[in-house]
Image (cartoon, rainbow, N blue to C red):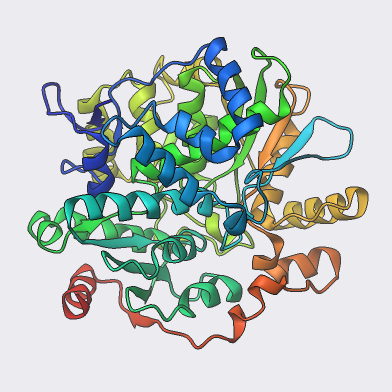
Length: 478
């Protein structure tokens, strides 16, 4: 399996999995994708169904990942999956339980039982094991520079903490995360973990990460890598849970399932796009946004407009308070027939000069639903409260605000897309206790495994929104 950049011109050299694992963002500013998506058929799905039933999630992960990874020995890759996905880490041997909501068409895919109570653990635990393995094989060190709107940071830090070959520098938007999210990150005392609170919003943090990566000399000297969803290894790990959930809610190998996915950065739903392109029988991918609806605007109108920081609303589903969807470029690359020059123009020149691009009049945009299965919707604070309240009192199911965005939008598509519709859970409600209390007027009890999180001393550095100061901090602490 070889990988190409979304901005790479014809004839550009392709790369192997282990190389792009450590590189993250491509040198030309693009994102990596397989040169061709591997294809699965009914026989493969039948085999995977048996593997999941008899050997469990780690073995299924090994089977799926083996289609994308050919430069790590199979036995080693299996060991990586077995270390990443344990019952101890995910509170259940099933790793990804699936629950039907009442007797209707909606289901919940529970992705948040990992160490930080967020779906990001599903990919990050694997990524940590992959990093440790590859760095050991190369006798090397990696400096992780990432940005988070809430959950990526803690998931990354819990997966990388204590690894002597890894240093983590995580940028957060100051004051934009919930108290629980901040406590999870800033309470870590591991010497290889560094938290930086920047003035600004998530997109400013992401821009700083990209600016540092754009300094090729600095990136090479300090071995800068990525854990954000720009890293292909993280996205391909998410493909696995689409497969697992599909297997758990179907009884035949041709049954179609729809997925409703809360997303701001397009990473979670992009994994669904990849799974669909591989041949997994996915009918519709229902994209759900909050008030920061840049993605819903594109899928509704064809116009992709990046918002200024001042336009990004602080909402009660803060992990989706994003106006620049980093992973979106991967989908547009496929949408435009993998025309890298055109993608580079859209995401390079046009966004830089105009702040938007418009595909509304193109034949490709007209095929988004029919060819790629995408529809979208948006949700408000009032919608979230009503959805949380309704599920709790009607069905005894408690969900977090981001998942509520997904459920709300999924309801709008019932009867118009194939059922079942699986809503992908984003996090456990405990991470957003204030909003949950507003919705159901009940104080949440903190689960015992998180009891000490809020009381840990904080370790974080405040910093202005300046790439050079971030680089200087990396130099001082490396």
